[in-house]
Length: 232
Image (cartoon, rainbow, N blue to C red):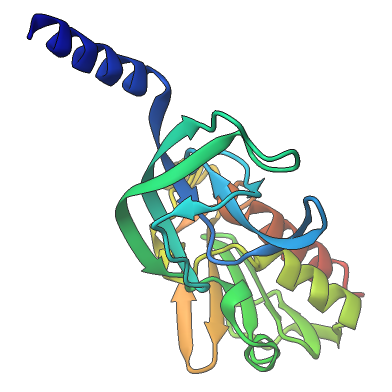
């Protein structure tokens, strides 16, 4: 009897020592990748701050729906005799922790992307600047009455660059982004905001220091400023 109990405990210990559990984040879109041949891969990471990585395997029990981002818990165990071109690891779903519809710009159709408008505004007691960019026009304003303005055509290349820089920004999270600096509170920097209008809905960021936007929108803001401030 004792020997059977010992064997069972040994098996449980051996099994548990050969597997681990992890929490992973899954992006809302699959991407083209190259495994044994061309295929579509999930994009995964182990923390919100990490970079996305291609995931070439399958997760047993997990049903992926494109357009939704996931946070899941999985078990990972070694495959004793993997196929020659197969993975040496087996992933099994333990729990779907969260499933959220992605509201990022990348999820908009091409038609909706053409209806987007980006707007940046910075102001202090002695300073004002505003830029508006849509797929046709780049406009900058230098006075609060919006009378002193200059415009130029927005090239297809410039528009596509903006869309590329903005594609991972989740519009519903824009107002929750944390500003890295606080100089605006003692006149060390102008107050700035970013607005993104999609169709009849406008998403507005929280205030941040002009010249020091949140990391999540920094590249986009810098590109908006570069395009609008270069108008002659």
